[in-house]
Image (cartoon, rainbow, N blue to C red):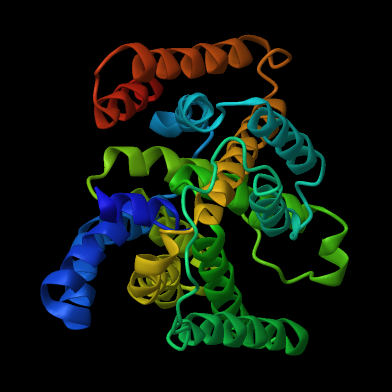
Length: 367
């Protein structure tokens, strides 16, 4: 339970961080790395192969068994948004933070800095007052060794430098460098699991390439909303960590460069997304022994969780607006019915998520 609490305070894949930490405590860094690889390899392999299947068989995402996959993904996101609302919104300040985050994110969806800035503000604002989470005892400052965290920061900086150099000089394989930087950044800022990846990916690969940024960066990686939501829907039917969606999206992102580059994209999507989680959990656990005594950490998480809830609701509004459920005729009403059905099954029944995915795929196949 202590490991779980610690991992919830970190960005990244919480389940993978817990597994990694157990391996670390039992056998040090070598066993931690091996444990993480065993944990993520099956799911990432399956999602990578599915990206090849979608490309090689020319799967039409607008028709056939995947025609309702977008509505399926929105239904899952709606359920996750409601769930995180009940968990994170417990008082007036967190409600205000969530609403502000939702509004700002929705209006500035094409702005890259909106996610990290709101996260920092959320953590700072909930530290202004000490009424909700008071300081119970005076803690004497202890020396904390921050040396190891420099590897995390160094990779972040090097990835950004190479990505920008590849963009400016239009390197032949620039998309591979851009993809690594994007996914490493996602893994470094995601609080709340794969559900929060959706708005980040939509911002990076859908909203921004279709904005004025296209003129400044005409060679940017560009995906459709269906590409991302297909991976988000299918990953629910796959055992293992939901962060394995990175393998699918990475492969789809480099599909036009050939099969070898698509395979590299799958690998980059997996490694770059999980790497920050592993580095943070391994390097911060010794720090956590001291930090867990400081109430400022818990106050910050109160605000961060509220901001993350706003991200998810903004993504939900963005997707619903783009889906045009009320103005798209009969198809719009069918999509709306699928969203409502998926949400209801998740909310009021114990039907496993993979079964719901299969049912929606069968519906797309039959109707």
